[in-house]
Length: 307
Ligand code: G1P
Image 1: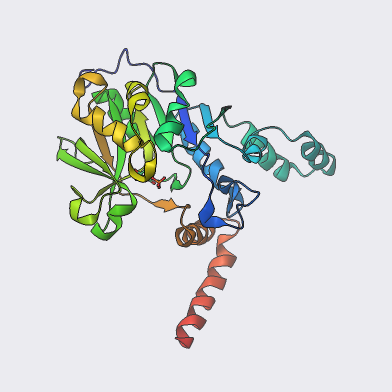
Image 2 (image 1 turned 180 degrees about the horizontal axis):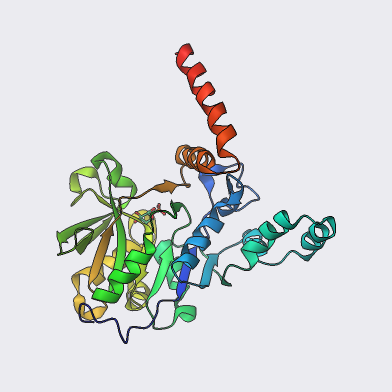
């Protein structure tokens, strides 16, 4: 694909959301409830992610699920009993909230079977995706809708072809929690060319402080590579390892570019960040925010007096 050539480019319409993880960091809450269903204020975390995909124009969503993930399917389906009860009561506001998630997108599900890693989860999407570029959204990362990232990544993919990953600069001591990219500058300040990738490196071996965050726009060649990718870090088939091949061999589905994100991201896979996300989003809500902020100010003032 030649830079700037957007005319004949197939529109990216499919989003893949891996959601087979066990959520052990949130036990016991996740013993019988998928971690993706934990509420962020009053909406399950996964709904924010599906809404993000839809607002980037991706209305075909495939979730990679596993055992004990049925509540995800139910959440994005109709609930006639509840709808009719709310209808009879004339509670239009709540009825709209119930119907919102089932009207969002065309949902598809496939089970991962064995949890063999993120790369393996993405490979489970191959029959559904076919040979078109597609997006992957990791459910633990919430991107604030006021800082649209996926839209920008899709634009960059249309311009350069190949694959596009999302990068964020992190403190060097944090890089071991992420995939890490070696990069070169391009003409665009928010776009870099990715020349190498390594999954969760020790800080001393990290090629940069650019961390891979959970949004990807991928060339379908990734499937051919994933089929041959050996288990890597943690004994799992790593998406980062397959991307490393795309980045270094442009003939098979490269190049790989990175969009450097400077907006608001909440990591709901981490308990501390999950709490921070709820507080921030609750403060900003028109309905809850004013009361909640007043309470929070007095709570913080009390805490400061005591410390
Ligand atoms: C996954 C990826 C990693 C990436 C991270 C972003 O790791 O393997 O490269 O940086 O998501 O959230 P996980 O957090 O699932 O261990």
